Amino acid sequence: MAQVSLQDIRKIYPNGHEAVIPTSFDISDGEFVVLVGPSGCGKSTLLRMIAGLEEITEGSLSIGARRVNDVDPADRDIAMVFQNYALYPHMTVRKNIGYGLKNRKTPPEEIDAKVREAAKMLNLTDYLDRKPSQLSGGQRQRVAMGRAVVRNPALFLFDEPLSNLDAKLRHQMRIEIKALQRRLGVTSIYVTHDQVEAMTMADRIIVLNEGRIEQIGTPAEIYHSPASTFVASFMGAPPMNLINARLEGGHVMINGSTALAPAEGTGTITIGIRPEDVELSPEGSLSFQVDIVEELGAHRLLHGRLADQSFTIHVGKDTPVAAGATHIKLNAEAMRLFDAQTGKAL
Ligand code: ADP
Image (tube, rainbow, N blue to C red; front, top):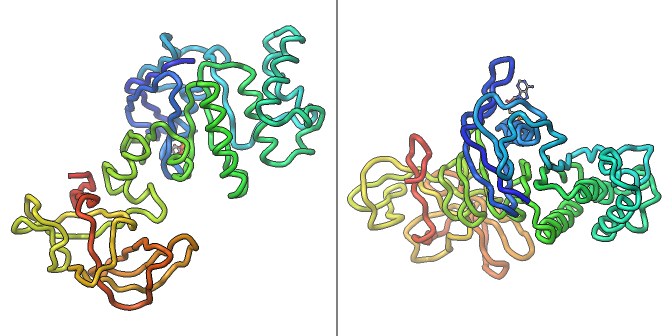
């Protein structure tokens, strides 16, 4: 188990591309941290630098008390789980799980005991003599997890481990991985482009955008208090509504109607509000045009326009709704204000 510390870590690829702009953060012992962001934001590059698979251009990386910039991947006391599982097709599950230990010249009895223990934990006991081709996608992913677990590393690194699974299996494996991590207490860094994985698995989320950290926080902080419009629109499905508004005379105005008061300042701003923080109300000061009702069983989403900008509302399954004009109220406490130019939270 270990703490991980990145100080001003930077990555410039040989072609001159700066994939990671100097970045610092600390991860506590036992913490599960998810690096999330759109494709190309630099999350794999960061993870691969931590793993030692990619050279660190500048900055300092420590795992535990040790600076590991120049330490070989094999000597960093980490175990990595990849998207493509990286299993050996000609080896049985037993051999795949124990492979890393055999390489380290662990005595055979010890390998056997550790493999059995991991297999039990991962529900693979009945499959130990099968080859990977005779397993389902979820089982293969568990074998890859088993191989990481038997190493008893200081740090788990996950690189989009669930991307190849279908939606239902992804949901199940999310819970399994999280439960396993809790049980073992191993510090973990998990890379994904899927904001749902980030929200549901992380103790803390690091949102990356174009090689830069947009925000670090707990899932609740990231969801309710996004540091920027980028985070507001990347995290949450559907995303936070973002609407152009004006600050004037102590009010936030949308299209001439008061959306929030009192409010300080003047000029153009962007307001953010989650779909579930909006209420249909005949007394509401804002007009909302419902274009499409999306039926989701437990609730409904109303997609439409507020002041000619797209806007979505979340309503309960029993709320009577129909396409057309209506009125809404925004929950003032849940409203977030952003600088219209920089997109940063005010
Ligand atoms: P992510 O994992 O978030 O999708 P990556 O870390 O793989 O993003 O890549 C970050 C950026 O660095 C991207 O613009 C990508 O094209 C670029 N990149 C990745 N690997 C290399 C490389 N070996 N040489 C040059 N540029 C690279």
